[in-house]
Image (tube, rainbow, N blue to C red; front, side, top):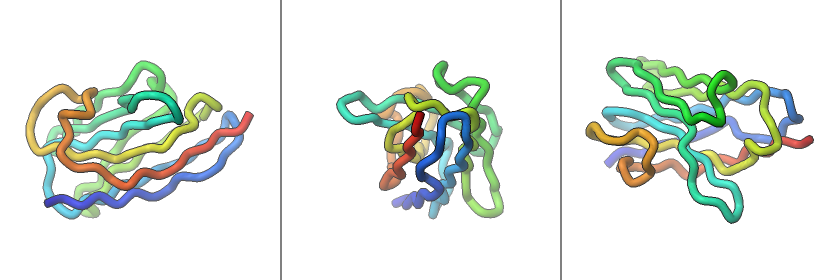
Amino acid sequence: QVHLVESGGGLVQAGGSLRLSCTTSGRTYAMGWFRQAPGKEREFVVAINWSLGSTYYGDSVKGRFTISRDNARSTVFLQMNNLKPEDTAVYYCAARLKPGPYNLPRSYDYWGQGTQVTVSS
């Protein structure tokens, strides 16, 4: 069993920045971030292969969001810059134990509780 603890959400004006963190209690193959806005499906944001450091970004966040990891702290970070109102959503951290499609929620084995990000215009 892997537990994920997220932090860092909040309210920010458009053009601002936020950094989300997700700490895992166990070793995983990869970590990802998804987001879900009211009335919409869960959307892939970004993922990182834990050992290789390979990263994968959703089209809507490329050039604005950056994922990184701190092996010693078992933590991944999502740096979000130039935020837009359409980035408003609950952001979920997810962990997977084996290879597979990075952008599909069903590929992930464990999920965090979610953290709200609200971007005002």
